Length: 517
Image (cartoon, rainbow, N blue to C red; front, side, top):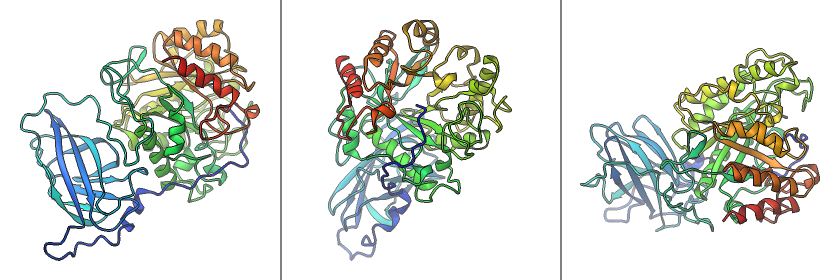
């Protein structure tokens, strides 16, 4: 959604980074007397194993002082690698593995336990680790450390969902014959499918704030992002996805961004938000929304070089390293979708449609745009160069409302995981069924089509009702703009309170999704 720059926004405190966890457990000491209860215990087990991979789990028990967050470290004795995990933020450097608590399971009282799991690769041997440290303190080890004696021959289709310490009121579900939510996505023909090949249709909401608050000195989020807030989203029956707009200057810590709102603080807050959404069974869609580059031409949102508004195309200087960093943060987790650029509008700067579509795909020096542009091919290459195989969404021209040249200019993707994104509002050019039939349906017949934003500025829902019906007949995905408590007359706002109370406009989306069963 192209909206006016927000001068003041509700702020939320930046979430605590995992790097601070080591300072939160001074009372856990290793110097206990012989026979005394160990400060902590860890049970490590391999729950299944196959030719090149395995599924592992850890159960951590705190036997000493209460903590508000935790970090478990251990070393693999072989060449095992963690490829994805759940109920913790999993990282690996060499043979050393770190699992840092999520926001919902960091608090442990004496005697309390928490579990986390992961998928990994191995070759040669798969012996388990023999030493564990919790926040720097050595733990006793209990339980199995070796694989099952009769391993399965094939890997699990997705990691199991282990409920957090404080489980969401609407736990992730397992559709018949499909992945545990959220699904591990890839493209098959013109469909999004999970790891079992079952078609996935995304229905959800946009959650604005992370694209603008940080650049305006107003924190990172606009409104709450705790478990209660996510429960409110999932209380709308049928919602299974949340789109998260991002700001590249905040992610990359440019100097004008407050330190508390940018860089590692921003990355940690967004990462925690993504993991929280996944823990509730929701598909996160990460969208590059506000970008760098000075543009003062036709339809300019601002004259500022900084990422304080929407620009016609992403800039080569920062957008490429942005996507490399994001892809490295989430590669291996194919439940996360990357929306490469919110709403391209090079057509407002160039004189011909052909010039605009060429700029869209190839970037470089584009007519009417003063900075070097990162084209969609550049961004696809940036993501794939990291080894990430996540589904990539690509919006078209005219603020993602025009897809007429999308198929002819589709970038090359070695993984074949590209989807087209369209934004449709009642005030757009392509806002009628005849246009949808002539312009959108041909694209949807070739590649997955996701309506990343839908809405209307009338504070009603007759238009979105019509469009959702059309999308349903074509089995297409869509997300409403936006799950924020703004005055709907200034932009389509789905809710009037973060408990999920719908506006008149939001009631239309809520009722429609509930009617789908």
